[in-house]
Length: 68
Image: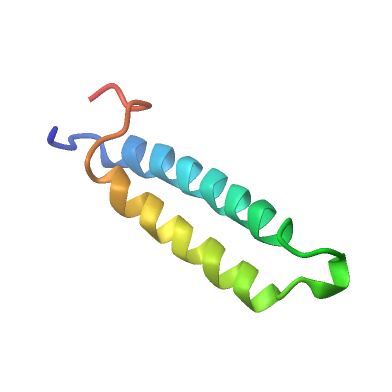
């Protein structure tokens, strides 16, 4: 695991990656409902937030987007 020397760059890259993961999870979770009225919004929000947190945690191992 590489040592993080530029925290600002890391947070920016990790934040962008987490935001993409949150959006993808929301789309996938919403897509499981047959119609829009059947969407369980609490599940969508909680699953998306959890995915974002997990994305940030896995980014600690390293981000190819950063030069370090």
